[in-house]
Image 1 (cartoon, rainbow, N blue to C red):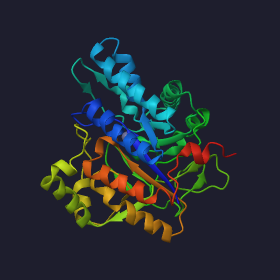
Image 2: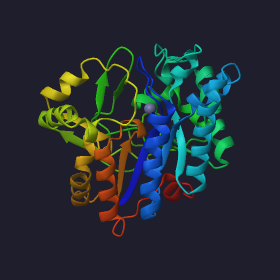
Image 3: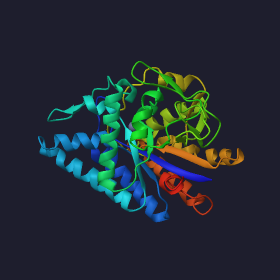
Image 4: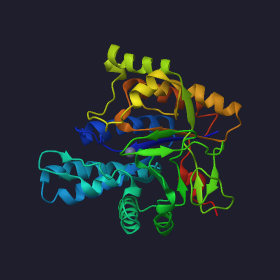
Length: 331
Ligand SMILES: [Zn+2]
C-alpha cells in the first residue's frame, strides 16, 4: 500500500482565524519531528492565497512580516527536505483583508466556482506561481478548499493552463450541501486512482486529469459522540492545537451525531484512532493507495501520538510516499 499523509496547511476561516504560530508552525514542527525520526515524507497542500495576502499586507502592517517569513521559511524547509508542496486554493482570500489587528474573512465567495472563468484562471495562475517561486519545484496536484471542486467544468481550462493534472479532493460518497459550500461525491468510482475529464466523479479512460481520492470511511454516530465527549473530558490530549475557530457548517454536527456518515480517513484529532483499522480494511479490499487527510491546526496531542505509532508500525511494510514520488514522472 502506498500511504500518503496529506495536510491542508492553513489557518482557520471562522470568526477567529487563530495565529500562524499555533495553527501552522508549531503543529507542522511536530510533523517534521515525526518525519525526520522515521525517515518518511508527507504532502502539504498549502493555502497559498494566504501567503499572497501576507505578502500584500505586510508592506502596510509590519507586524505581519514575521508571519510571512515563518510560513515561507517552513514551506521552503519542507520542500527542501523532500516533502511534497502542492496547491490548495481557498479563493475567499480575494475578498478578505487585514484591518491592522486581525484578518477580516469574507467567505461569501467560498468556492472557486463562485468566480467567473477569467477570474478563476487568474487565481489558479497566481496561487500556483507563488508556490513555484517559493519551492522552485513542479506543482501539479490540487486539493480544493472545503472540497469544493464542482462544477469542475468551470475550472477545467484554468487547471489545464496551469498544468495541474492531478487532483486529490474527492472522497467516495461524500456529500454536503449548504448555501456557502457544497460537494457531491456520491457515485464516484470505487477506485483508488482513475482518470477523468470534466467531472471528477466520472471516470474517463485517458482523461487529462488523474484523481487520487482521499480514502473514505463510514462512521457511526457513536464515533462522533466519543470524539466530542473526549474533547471535553480530556482537553489536554484531545483539543486541537490550532487556536482559531472553523467556519460554520450548518447542520453538520447534528448529522454526525445522529446518523451514519461518509467521511475521510483523517489524522485530525480523534479520527487518528481509526488509521490502522482503515489501512487493514483497504488491504483487504486490495487497494493500492491510501490517502489520509489532515490539517496541522486540527491535530491534537492524541493524533500526533497516533500518527507516530501508525508510521512506526507500518514504515517498513508500506511506503509513506508523495504525489511527486508517484506521479510526477508519469507520462
Ligand atoms: Zn483548506
